[in-house]
Figure 1 (tube, one colour):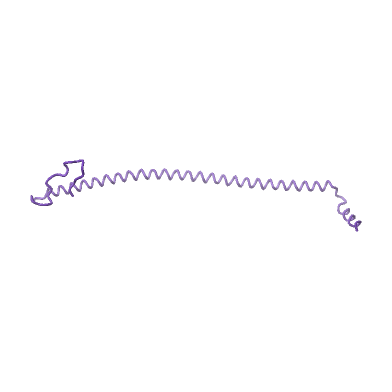
Figure 2 (cartoon, rainbow, N blue to C red):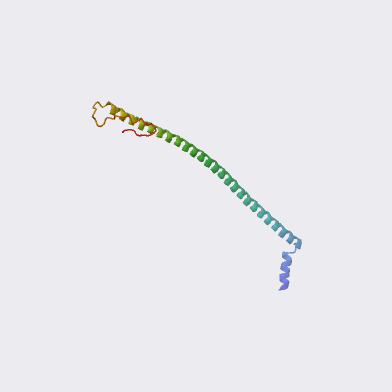
Length: 132
């Protein structure tokens, strides 16, 4: 029995020596290491690409945020100016209404009319004591 096993092994391994086994094993390990290095390089490249995309999107976001802040400041400034103009116009309207009321009272020809204004409310210009 052992002779048959030995004869089969000798037939199979007859032309192969130990150095051929070692060479095949070393070559296999080299190819496995090369494949592993290629996979690692590809993973590193993917991570670098993601970082570049992140940096690009972050730069765009920063730019858009700055534009937004600039527009918001410009809007606030414009709105303040418009509100001030509106306030000034409202004050002018109120002053003109009070003057109109005063002059309507002066035009009343009945000297005993209750609506007639006898004294000008504009004597003291520092106060808003206009008749309505």
